[in-house]
Image (cartoon, rainbow over all chains, first blue to last red; front, side):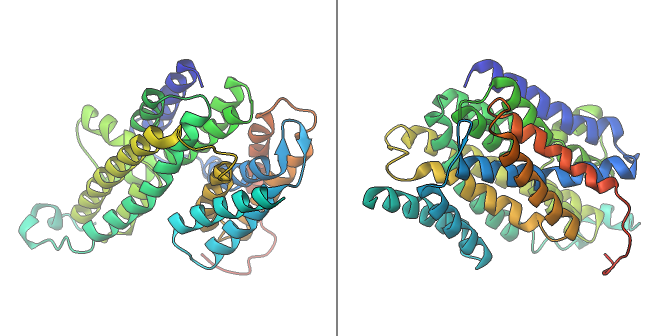
Length: 100
Length: 233
């Protein structure tokens, strides 16, 4: 992770915030734009979940991470506190790796 | 709408702001520690992790960038994916701006704190004075917990063998926790499934990290008109 990434991301994230808050401000985004932007997090976060669980480089694979994901999904679904969800998911994957 | 409230500070009831703001702060604290650990393990350093949390200050984007870098993705896809994820803060800015009037300097400063938690807390209040108070109290709580948590995680991060303890799964676990509240509507569920499918389908042939950027295309389903509404609101 380079300083360039850190600083470009910092500037970009700040400009997006300023664009909405200060530039658009009391006016409104066109409703279609707003609807599209509102759906981006669901699409991107689910994509990230897939990447971090089922891919290694360009390969698709199922390994010990899948066990952790199942634990995380059940934990969030059962409204387990977030810190415990993360701890249990990591532990499940760690234990699976240790015994396999 | 209720402009008198703004001037009647003594008469305004500020109950129910500090407690929820601290509860949100604690939840964010856990994410922040995870972020610090993952960031230093993805080739970051304590100063870089801190710069991310102090300056970028939008959790999902920070996680996304580090996740892409950790997987060997390019800097461009890490940044573009993270910024797509951060684009919702622009919508939040439009939503909270009417409740935070002030000088240009004041609004530019407030913009930096316009994220999920501050927006949610602000819009949940029922008077202009409470909205303004909720924004800043939540901003202080989240900014404090987020940065202290990042520092703790970054300082202890290198002492873990992330593979051995399964800490790499902190990424998808955190993303599951972040996405769950968003999947309340049929559209959002479709976007989530679509994003997952696009990512897996393009992983074999796109540069690492690019499938994350590509998945944002699925959000265009927002433009498809609804044929029948089963539920209002």
